[in-house]
Image 1: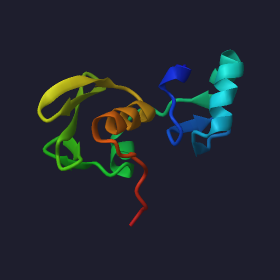
Image 2 (image 1 turned 135 degrees about the vertical axis):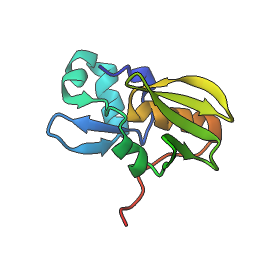
Image 3 (image 1 turned 45 degrees about the horizontal axis):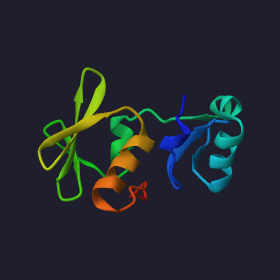
Image 4 (image 1 turned 90 degrees about the vertical axis):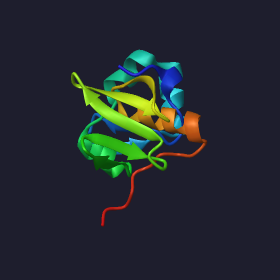
Length: 116
């Protein structure tokens, strides 16, 4: 279930069709108008190592880093603990939560990187 208050334009979600999409104004309107319906159509993407790599993070000794290694994520008990400049921030479970944290801390968008 997604809390509509967590969504920002450009966040990445799964659609029930299996497609991965960027959040648009129309998607946010769906949540505002009918939250129960929207949570049957749109799903958060669980944060995985594969998604961290897609978002441009780099792994060094089990820690994933981005933004000049100032934002780090470490897997702990099945969840990702986020650290900024060495200080614990909070646990992140979904891709859109990481995107929001990254934006709040850096003022920049965290988007998927093109495949090499």
